[in-house]
Image 1 (cartoon, one colour):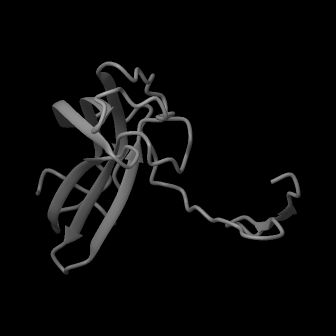
Image 2 (tube, helix red, strand yellow):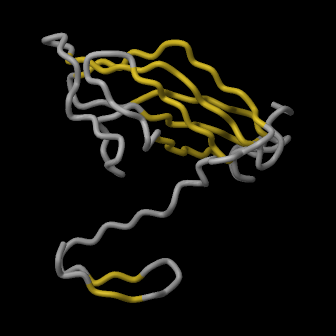
Image 3 (cartoon, rainbow, N blue to C red):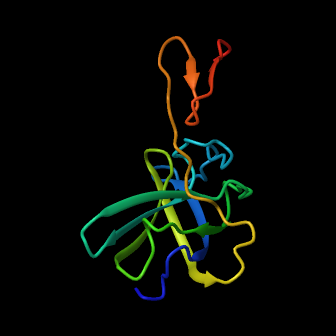
Length: 150
């Protein structure tokens, strides 16, 4: 995988659609703007280095207009990191996943290209935390705040 130099930017494009396996109806619950939803198509990327370190990353198309009854354009640019790119990359396996239980994800016309101009590339996924109970939060930079509206 010598073409995946460190910090390369990849452009993932595909046509995607979801339908209910039992009824054949299009999936209406997909809203790409919902951060932790599993109801929309996404890419789960497995990479590993020659030393054996495996890494899973998830990439979503937050701006994809969703048509439950037709093909949708999945189109993202991903800024790879030193952890999932480089000359010592031994494994690169993108998996298209997503959709509610009982749905079928159909993927067509997949293209993955290296681009020179990252433009609006997706940065590495942010850290996500969840709070249970009284919602007192601390951000990753140490800032503390309370949010009792959750």
